[in-house]
Image (tube, rainbow, N blue to C red; front, side, top):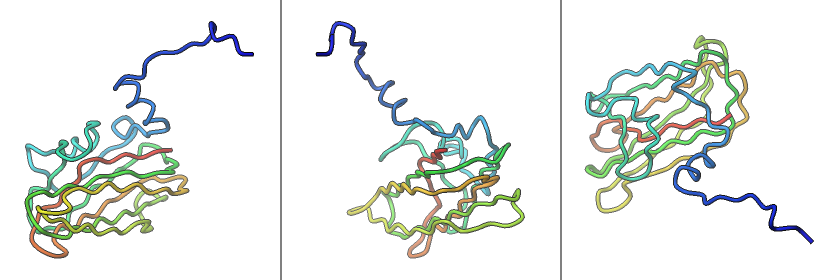
Length: 166
């Protein structure tokens, strides 16, 4: 029988729950440069990494409506990536936004597409999407997101969260 008096335990609060979910998360801010094609001053690219997620969270928004935008994660050293998580929210317009993800293992000379996903938003229907994909990628030197905001309808490119896991 187990001696329960030796059991070590502690309540798992909001801080503990957040840390528990982040096991293996790559610290993008600490090991990469984010290059971007545009941003609104009140919605900078840093919002992708600020830890806020879910509907209503801070987010990056392009400064140019109806324009294809790019976000490039340039790693200081090649990274293994096993999981990609990002979120998209649009509560104001009916439109379809496409997100393409490509990786480079040679410093950006060549890219390989690993994901293409379309999201159809409607203010009276779907306004938020969370995407989580698993991969077996090694030696990724750059990860490029291409956001097409207006596949159907008019709009501005936006992403709420970007997380990568080793």
